[in-house]
Length: 509
Image 1: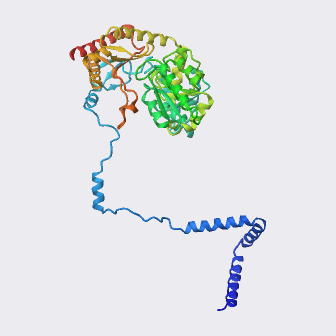
Image 2 (image 1 turned 60 degrees about the vertical axis):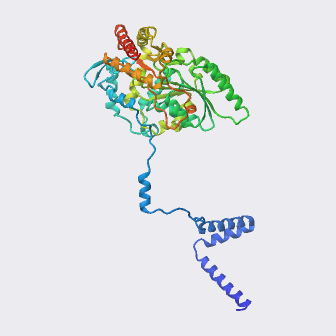
């Protein structure tokens, strides 16, 4: 075949292809597009052709060019490896002390009132529950809860943002905001997950958190989830807080701007003392930090109407960026809340995991919270009575016992009793020794008809270092005061506890 024949054959093939292509629907439109595109912008046509060829090359290319390199195991070898594999435990195994404590733990049958009936049949004086105002079993609250239960059912069975929000939830949010004096409020279904969701909703990787070393476990989990950089300051030491804040500001002066937070508690769960909120807000403003205040144990307790440490210390609530609290505990309902500005609250409705992915608070608990807040605002006698009982219990335990002293604030209805430093030093008591002694005191008091408990923290995570712990919980007794006791009953209870402490300590000389 010479060149002329080849040219004729190629022309016939191209003509046949053209004829067949023109029979395709839309081919005329495509040809006009290509012609006009080439005439108006030939560079564009070249780019499109390149992208088309690249796409064809990508689709036809082999998926993996690297040669697989692995050892093929037989079925017997696979079974052997599976049998040998031992998963790492999620939690540490129980110690002998914990097992013994679990076996002797008293079980309450019925409501947890000031006088509680145990599974053994005995009726004991209960100073182990947070029934400060004796609202557990309150007839008015029971009637309201039953009425709400019959109207709304047990629970909404859906997250607040997906058919879970009911009118009683919005009313409770408005009631809490009005009680605190904030612009807005958001309620969560569980108290523990409130603060542990609020923190990571605002603090992210690269942000800086300055926290008190004695903050509770829920706060620590929230900080861990946030993956922020954490700086600790000594418990309730305002001078150390100022030094840490100044150090952070100096270190970040030439770095990109980050969010910075101070996190502390109103009444500290693990110690019982109170934050110096006036000084904290002053430092927060001076060094341009945001403040997250956990009022889990101070809301419903401190202040003229129970509005918390802001009311008690005369601090404008707007000075606190995020005010977190519990509707369980003193309020005897359930769930938690975060109060602040409209922007702070609305941000959480999409960013807080416990709000977005958890079923909403049962309606009867929301109604109970609103009713209790109304009672606290209208009945100041509740605060007067519980504070009188606190003073009465203090006179029986703190100054009169030679073995323990109270670390709680005088306004706190939870008395945290720790062994005196001279007692620990003289007897060379380690952490486990102190826990054993305190448990024996709890058992001795229960034998004499008074049920109290020890201060318990969540177990230490596995494989953590001493630097990561930052602060070690001191073993302590925990005594909860209630208005359900008269003055004489409170004195008698305090005497039983003091005698139980003395008996155990003298027996262990």
